[in-house]
Image (cartoon, rainbow, N blue to C red; front, side, top):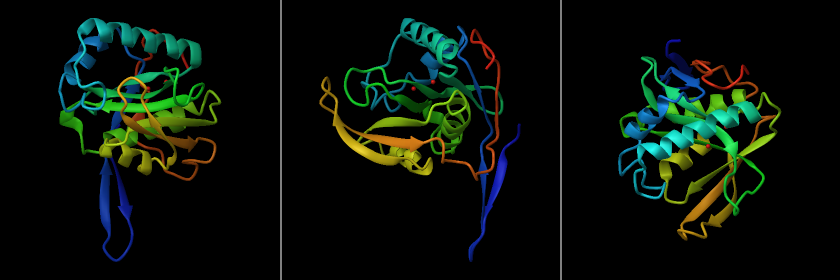
Length: 207
């Protein structure tokens, strides 16, 4: 599906073109693509700094397929209009024993070449409002490093509210937990240019 243009009315009218994206349950082959696009110190700055090896992403994508089958949502592979893998977005049960335990976490990560083009907001909104709300999840959280200004900006565009300040017990890094009510968010918004994509190993129909 092609990109979509939205006109913002006012004394200085502008037209904003939103990028076309596609989500799919990660395939086994996506492990190598995630390894490639995330192998960058800027991308990993707020994710432990160090890049991971291919085996990490093979196990990581396999768990996403398990989540898709178990919960009806996962961290999806994110593709652009030319079907290039550019990152991931979606949701998962909060994986730590600190912070918002028992909550559903939404998240996103993009390759460096795709920053600043609107991909994260469009894809995260689609994943949260369409893929995660459908199985009956009432709200989601996003825990973001306090210095990660780009991701904090995405939470604002999604309509999330800052709920609490946290500190990672391992890295001692400060983080902000944001929350979004899926039952009231996005009800009046136009659909974003997102298509479903291949389900991979998951059934027909979660970071």
